[in-house]
Length: 258
Image (cartoon, rainbow, N blue to C red; front, top):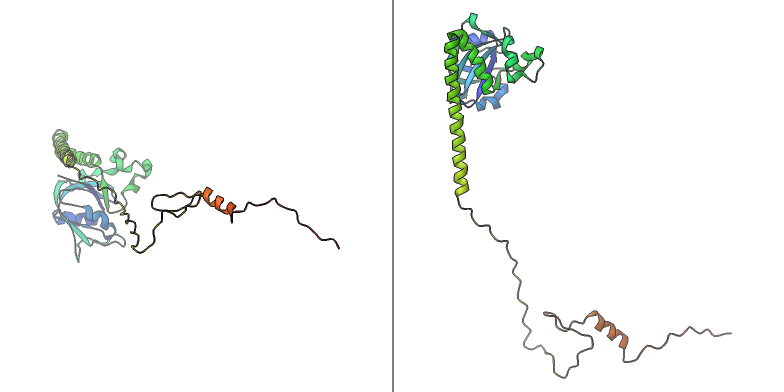
């Protein structure tokens, strides 16, 4: 089933080259390498011929791109055709059946950002990615001209039904994958690493310890892990005591008279 829908633009001479090859291969220009890499087997292709501005044929991609040394397609400006994809024809119109782009372009989503009189500006370049609705709209008009209206409508309905079935199957696979991933047990989150606190060093055996008759300074408090540390009030009391004398009243300085 198709994944992408492409529009290939070329002049009439290069389109005739593809037609003489029996729609078995198509060259692509070097300036669109990123888009060329996205072309896969099963994608759909529609041809737009510049100059006459008509849609001429549709095809299906059978082989992804490959680089080639020589190409039967002639240069259009400075761009060469170093890439080639394999295709097979689907709808090929005769010259008198070509669909005029000027009569149907206003119905395409691809050209809505352009002014109605400048619709052809949207088709500049060799490779364009179309929406599914635009592609089937163009192919439906081509089928009406080739097979008649009634038969064309039947073919279009069948193609749309197949595409809808493909999309639904893809959505179902995504839903199952999502449910399967949600059903898996989630691994427990690792707890944050804890920092190991080194143990306090043991006192040396020959260090003198506190004696029972040693007098503890006033205002000294001990905290866990820091023995003998004095608080702020104790330090102030020690400074005030000095050598056991109270500070006398402050005296004014005396000056000797001459």
